Image (cartoon, rainbow, N blue to C red; front, side, top):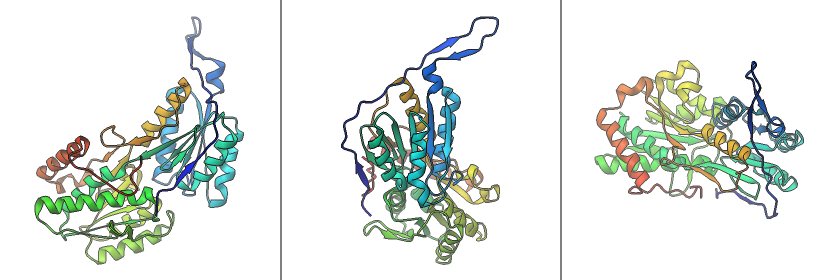
Length: 356
């Protein structure tokens, strides 16, 4: 499916916010805030996956929470539980009078666009989707770069010579992971003259295995079990909560491991799955959100997209945790070399879904 891109043609005057700090007189050294700082607040609207999705909603909220603590501002989340909640929840966020609204995922693109057009004095940011507008900042990640490392790793530890991936839906933020993963396996095969195969995704045709949603855990378990039955011993689910079903299938299959996405699955998934988490493809959403809210407070908000890469630390792979012994020092060194080669432009990681 082609990259969704929404364009807002209105010209707006960008509102700025000033942040000043003062100190209360002795003997009570309690910091005081100006009226501008006290009135500044931020709201986040989740997509239909909910707040604790162990994926980008959760990471985005952690970032906004950190911004609230670090910057001393009020930050709250508005949780969507279904498609009908999306537009009303963005409108509700605007109605709070907050200066900054963070939305998460492509499902919220149209509602974000509409509210941004109607409220040019409010600043919006959207995670994992590119939406163009004078008062909208897109927060996107070139996850193919980190997934390339994950694919190389998967091929390097596979005992069956078969690895797999699947998604929640065929959309650019999902298939970007899958493209990078397939290319990473191909690179390992090229370097080592091996023939590790990938189930679940064909980069050339942009077609593969999808559950059709990001919430039904059982669908993930069934799909992953089918891949395991075909010999896959490393699986990359790109499907939000649905990926937990793949973890459930993997934990019951000796020798099968899982690569999580968005955040470190070793920390966010139930502890029972820790023994099978090989690594995770990380998006550093938290730091991006903190930086963008901070810029907004300082009056330096702009609408140029934030694109997380290996070079700027926006993406990477997580530690190997309990499975560190399965990754040889030689393979670890190769991954470090490949990371540096991608950053230097020696290895080009390309996908139809690469953000620009």
